[in-house]
Length: 246
Length: 246
Image (cartoon, rainbow over all chains, first blue to last red; front, top):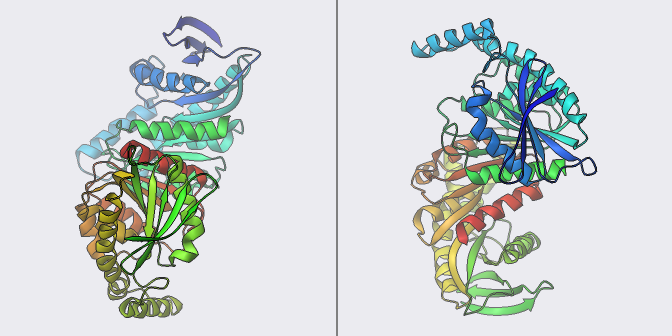
């Protein structure tokens, strides 16, 4: 991991761009962090829209995390932004668009091809990022994961023991196999669901929540579209991390 | 309304028993309340288990409300405690028990007979109680409603314009007509659902949440049985009232 730029935001948060091999990422560090007072870390998951496009919303979440005393970090998803395309996923996205426009049901094979290659590639990248970040003296853990493609969050929660708690955003197109993986998740979960999200299959989201094996899991459903998570719901998610990362 | 007893609890909250005609009730007032600084009010709904039996849990909720600066009050449900029985409801409860023991589906006529007479009688009683409470100089409003039989909460939220916001506990056996009433509810709602509550029909609870007409409504589902609402979920409900009653 090498850092490529650094700037201090007006609230004292330091935003550092980095590259982990060919993967670009961003680390946000609260002013309070130091080698003698290392801070917890929140991994900020991304939708497949590209880091640059998501930057304002990410920086907002990072500032929120910093206000609670946490570092946060994100990396570009495989196939997004300037990273090499993933032809299988691109093909699946085209098939998906065609099916939706034709009003046809979206078959399992489309959903699997759209999501699983991304999960298979992104999860080890997140783990390598975590190795690098936890080697920094200012970061001590515990580690939380928040948002992004929900199937990536499910896989990470299942396989990565350094993640202590996760906030997941219910989103559509979850491969069937992820429901089995969800049963093996044991960490505390806070699941956000936008009840009237046009792009979301509500029953699938409720089914996935039901499947999680975690003894502590909460579902928070709110009104408003996909990006309309109300401020108070964000505050409640912050409190969830405060309970589990402090 | 006349007060029949008064005691000061150790945190300065004053607990006053009262009778409104033949209806017994309790009012809890925070130490801070006075005629020159009247406080908001939370109506604490009851399950049909009797005021005396519910007293410890109610006092706990009342202390919580008082800590946020709110008065709170409750009244005995029709047919509960020392109040005259409601033969129709008792008969429906016996029919319900018989159906459940026989493993038979619970028919609409049983649910209607179990719940609707209670709603029809309890809601005007709550409104009369509200008249009396709001006439006290130490109580100024706004008014919230919290808990108890969910159908009573739905009807109150629909018909009583002085109720500004409500916390509802999803419970089973909701008459079909209440789904229509739910569509006419417009106030902010915070709905608690115990996901694995053995005595609760989860799909009915989700359907009722979906039906509410309110622009702001949140569903908070947690693990644990019927009475196992986690402490953090109570805190989030407190924050909901803080947003809407302050």
